[in-house]
Image (cartoon, rainbow over all chains, first blue to last red; front, side, top):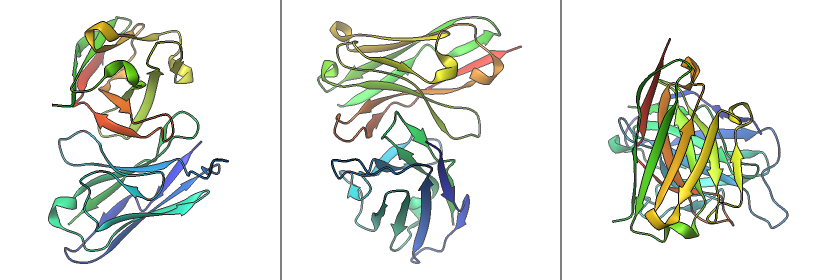
Length: 109
Length: 120
């Protein structure tokens, strides 16, 4: 399954909203109703960390300014009000058939 | 503390071998499927291999099967990746990661990674 993110680079302004899109080459909607789509962020010099799983569930400790939506092949990560600490590369990942990541979106102030 | 700590990376010549280790702590290691994910310099993330809790199911990224071998020792809370026939394109930071559960396939815990550099 091929994951395609857009944009690849996203300049943001603190306090403003931001949005990243992710499209999969096959539907990630399982018969059980789950969309096997996660979002991760890799902050500078760090390892990736989980933000959103199963398309829309925020991981523990993730601020509520982050939200995930979508189903099937089209997904979106939204940041309601960007903060300086949100800088990093954001990846979507499918977990339906093994694991495949998008190429990443570089979010920069 | 719940954490994963990789080790074993380094500089190796093309065609050489290397064994990576990942030490887990703070959780019941044997209950989790574990993965290796790599990231070439300046590039994105790529799943390498996975192993379930009792080592019954081992999977590899297709082009790597035959050169890489994943294993685990639950008595030592450790995950391993034996890499052989190394090539320049294997140069990357190798992360071990934990699958949250079989219902989500989400990777909820990552180590800090270990750098493997393959020289020609």
